[in-house]
Amino acid sequence: MSELDLTTEEKILKAAETIFLRDGYDGSRMQDIANEAGINKALLHYYFRSKDKLFEHVFDKKIGIFFPKADGVFDLDIDFADKIGLIIEGYINLLRENPYLPLFVLNTVNNPEKSDFIKKLPVGLMQKIALNYFVELQKGKVRSINPMQFVISIMGMCAFPFLARPILLSAFGADKEAFDVLMKQRIEELKLYVKLILTP
Amino acid sequence: MSELDLTTEEKILKAAETIFLRDGYDGSRMQDIANEAGINKALLHYYFRSKDKLFEHVFDKKIGIFFPKADGVFDLDIDFADKIGLIIEGYINLLRENPYLPLFVLNTVNNPEKSDFIKKLPVGLMQKIALNYFVELQKGKVRSINPMQFVISIMGMCAFPFLARPILLSAFGADKEAFDVLMKQRIEELKLYVKLILTP
DNA sequence: GCCAAGTTTAACCAAATGGTTAAACCATTG
DNA sequence: CAATGGTTTAACCATTTGGTTAAACTTGGC
Image 1 (cartoon, chains in turn yellow, purple, brown, orange):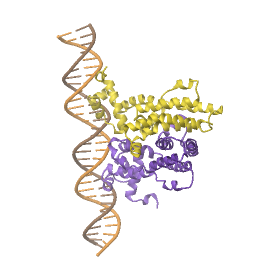
Image 2 (cartoon, rainbow over the protein chains, first blue to last red):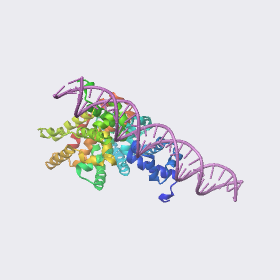
Image 3 (spheres, rainbow over the protein chains, first blue to last red):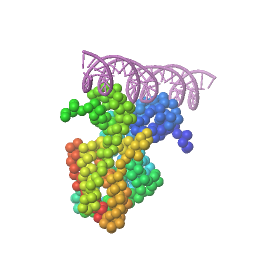
Image 4 (cartoon, chains in turn green, orange, blue, yellow):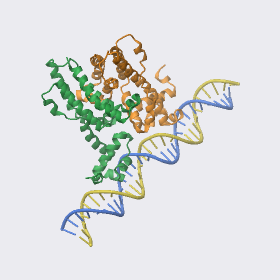
């Protein structure tokens, strides 16, 4: 099935993702999305009634990617640090494929006009990590720090470079390829951090 | 000098900061800024010729805050880890006063239409930290990791919670006050992280 | 008091933008 | 083949938006 075999609805959604993620909600024009999809602007309103509705479709899809499940990890018979390491590896590789995702999600949840969307956030994994940290803490197996701080640190160290990419490229004079190498390297780097931080 | 004693230009700039930081460039209306400043919309164009020009003024001011200097720190006669600790403390307290600053800056530098602004970034401190890390590394005083990774981690762990605030409040059922407590606590938390990561 | 310069305002304008409508097109089915 | 229902388009509409203009207002110097 080639690119041209997509249904109109799929073409619209794909185009909407491209434009919304690149330009943000306010910066996106329905005409731009129509052009990107190679169709008439009125067709957008035929399939999705309004810009808001179309955006919500895109957001609902993307939010599930940004907040992955990773349930299986906690059933594995390995150290807590190794479980976190697996989550980090999966997450950075996910963001390497979706570099604009973090800024898109953060903009939406910080937009006063989109505050309803906050209820939709599937924060289960974040809570699960904090909870498991707490359990390990009780067992005296990890350093005594606030589990919430730990979760924030993990998420931030994974997502921040993708948010600040233009700054990093500018500060360190790197290019796209160098950035991707840096992110691959970062996986092992963060696994080390985690072991250091967790060791009581 | 009360709030009402501000000159018109100062009132405009203050209002523009409020609106641009809250709503972003595309989400901001010149009329909203005029209302916030308590003046006529045409006055905006009298003092600053266009929305772009006004935005640039705000950006130039804010970018200097987001990228602080902190030069003095490196002349102090203390451990490298303590120098980084001081920078972290200053930076988190800065962001506590300017919680919308990180998203504002990241949006601007990620905006394809504002790519020129990237040249303006005063990334001196970032480079200085990386360089000093490298020097310490030569002396065998810190763990052997990539200095760039270290800088990214520090920045990310400081700035990310302010970017993801709505997510954190949602995930952990916290309120504004709890968040600020968490950020104050985070200063000591990050100082600990740094010591752990740096110790060879 | 009055002139000149800077300041502020109301009214206005053209372009952009989200959305609508009615007609044309096309594929399926009786 | 023609009727039907879903699909696509061009043209159109109302509102919003950044920006302009010309007149009114204020202030400082003579």
